[in-house]
Amino acid sequence: MRIGILTGGGDCPGLNAVIRGAVRAAEVTYDSTVVGFRNAWRGVMDNDFELLDVDRCRGILPLGGTILGTSRDQPFAFEDGLKKVRKAYDRHGLDAIIGVGGEGSMSVLARLHENGFPIVGVPKTIDNDISLTEMTFGFQTAVQICTDAIDRLHTTAESHHRVLVVEVMGRHVGHIATWSGIAGGAAITLVPEEPFDIGEVCERIVHRHRKGRFATIIVVAEGALPQPGTMELPEPEMDKYGHQILGGIGSILAREIQGRTGIESRMTALGHIQRGGSPVAFDRVLGTRFGVAAVEAALDGAWGQMVALQQGHIVRVPISDAVGQLKMVDADLLRLNTMFQPRIPGDEYPGIPADRLERVED
Image 1 (tube, rainbow, N blue to C red):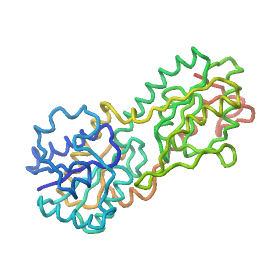
Image 2: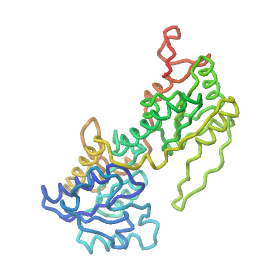
Image 3: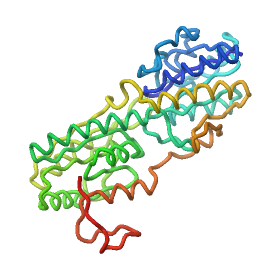
Image 4: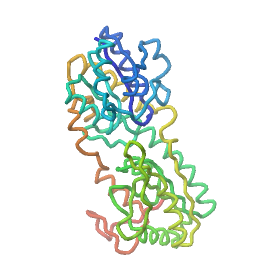
């Protein structure tokens, strides 16, 4: 069997583990060939490729990024895009293409499957927002990077008695913010799932400082939004792919907090640092499992399927179902987050009697 593979969308720790796993399974176990297309669908349409084998993949497991490169170009954006994809299948004698990517990439794969192409999907996003899979590789690495940064910021916040706002990735969901906020001991975490009231945020900070805690870490996802009428945000610009260009909420928050409370406030945006570097062990293992499972799905002719992690097992789910809606942060995690924020009069936590509720601040 001849299988094409490509990596699309943003880069992500663990992509090379997927490539390595797929190549190893194809060549050694199933006597098949893998053709790697550079820069995602752009390489398919431009015939920019390389043959991948075990020797080519030696040493790439701990590397961040992707040896194939990536882009957000996709065939449906070009008038002759589908024709070029069909030509690539014929030119290389491909039996399937494995597409590795996020929600946008999975949507492209679903449309290609509808157009009759033999396609298998591998979910990839550090945001961890693809439905029907419990975890995507790269997420745990991003969380660890953010947690390490928050750990470091605690000491400077305490030394200068400041509020430090840490802006992390998360366009539409707050998985990274929630996990790193809990792991890093942030006082307040703001996520897209729950619009915030800047007045309440400032009240919690002032209450905390009056009680003798003179440093506060706030984690905010880049896509977090204020409740209507509580704070104005500039209209975001759009990139050439129609995506909002996010980033900057941290700076706005820091200025607003300092202006309202009088407490010196600063902002740190971790940005693309969260994407870079070597993947943690969990992401290396999950990426490897996904790569092997994708090849096996192709050998079984499981077209239009995406490999996924469910209850510790790798399963197959329809790509079209996986892109129906984003996976939001679990309500129990959001509730856990609120339990550790500075309390103010009137706070209620469902299921916990008020006389037993203790205020916890790290």
